[in-house]
Length: 401
View (cartoon, rainbow, N blue to C red):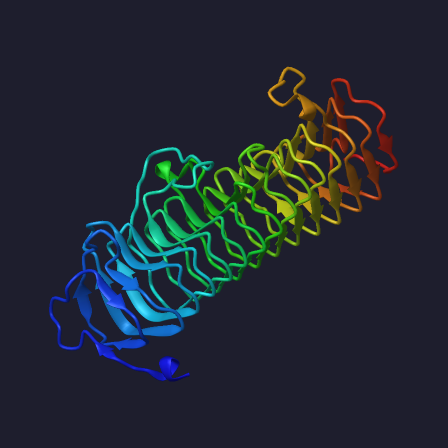
């Protein structure tokens, strides 16, 4: 406990602190502005466990010269609070750490790029940002501001990460990325206007989940006006499965409010997917569940699901979408993934469809799909069938207007 109570007034009175400073005990910084370039291995290096750094609003400024602001490697139980870090490639890099806590900090205006299409399969994609966590466990990030850079928070091969009440808006790639990370909780964060390529997206997203990120909770986040609101994908190398996405708002995307492709067993519950190009895009996924979502006013389809199987759509409101409320489709000529050359086994139950442009439900080359208990209001075409669509079980009663 003595180490936790230790207080060192570090840097007080220093106008130009030397770079590469090493911290081995708890410290309280004088609230001032410090030009602190990275000499190659971190402008500020944390070299001990069980310590607290209280910045009291101090600014560590890399002046746009790149590098790392704060470096933690193999550290445990370090708390960093009330600190501003800017002008580096990454404000904070944590490698192989445990139980790091970052609270009430501002890690904005670090590494940024613009105008190029992002490669979501590369762990090293992105010019920099706020926090990068690599192979770290049980990190907790609370009330962080990390804006105007490529990535707000980047978790690579990490697990048990908790991110709550953070502002990660106006970044150029992703507000939060989980790559090969599992059992994380992302709750009540803002990642609005995360976009690039003149607002067209280029695979930017408020939250990106990729590279085999499983069993994460994404709840209550505001992801509006981003390239995609929520984006889960990257083909099968590897897929990201069994995530719970609940109570988020991904509306006003130029692309998809929610995208979840090449995956299995993801659940979307009580989300808002409105005023985007598509509400949900679920291509090549299986066993995905959509329950209790608001899916309205999208330019094309409320839900578009190509080459999918065993989806469940239950208790959703799907209204005023420009083309179809729900479209289950298959392109027989697409043999890129032969085991997914199906559109089959879906269930639509107890949904409410209203005033969709072409059809409430469109089935193209779709088989063994069940419609039961759905309600149709002001639909000119409740059900549209095309191609080799057969062996479906239609229990709904249709009325047209």
